[in-house]
Length: 399
Ligand SMILES: *Cc1c(COP(=O)(O)O)cnc(C)c1O
Image (cartoon, rainbow, N blue to C red; front, side):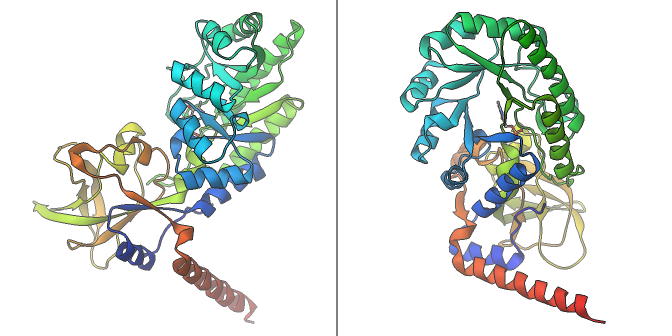
């Protein structure tokens, strides 16, 4: 599936309307990603993990499509409330809850929680008596970029005792959740986790506890600068088959974050300085590691960079505008010679980027434009695509 990527004309046209740096979010692309998951993983309902990108227009679009939402704090519940989403469509999926989070959950009517420790049970039972709970278990996956299982999850062996204790405390023990880690490139990680959790479901049933819900977390991957070397449709379909086989009667949920918004946003940033260090050209951009590129550090990520311009390509360095030596974004990037003022484009930068940007050195957060609001450019793109399709159709018809 293709990412949302502006072409050179669109980028430069937008840069006349909005000073750089700015982001361009395609809400249609978010909707397309949602439809892709529904199509290839139909057994699972969707809780969008909004920490990846809580832009109100993305939330509104997903809400209109019927999505549910994964939240981790009072602030995230408030964002959803502002987007018109009711608490009945949220799961408070941070296994550790704070007082403000409990208060917001009660205010907005959030009734589903996850937990991972015995010490969390009395807190939950006091703040949300009778709530539905899922226990988060640890699963292992060496093929995830971001490991979440060193910090989160109860050992598999303690899952059922924890659910029984939750029942005794007056909570409704509904089932089990896990997260194989973010940007998971392994279908086997899901399949193995499902097998292990299936055993727990059988064991629970044998002991008289009927579990009804399974939440398989997020982790679905998107392209980085190195591309994406898994067939995602095949991966989702394999998971779906395993769900049909092992959990035919269970309510299944997934919590995608990165997948829904990652490919739906572009950054336009421009060159504000250049220098030459030996044979290596350096370009200083007006956006850096303390801004939208913060995911390079926090999310261990490299975003696809698109430079426009002709001429020989030289391995170049791209750095951000802050007064810190750590603010270097790309090294050895083959780029044509670029003048001060040139715009460059970064794609697939919609997840875990704006959310961790800081105001270090006093730089303002990059503005976000919504692509679908740029009616003239959207219409132009549609015409180009139609012309393309017409010409490839006529080529196909040639004898
Ligand atoms: C972050 C998170 C997600 C989303 O993970 P992705 O890898 O972005 O899909 C889902 N569930 C929980 C509990 C999370 O913490």
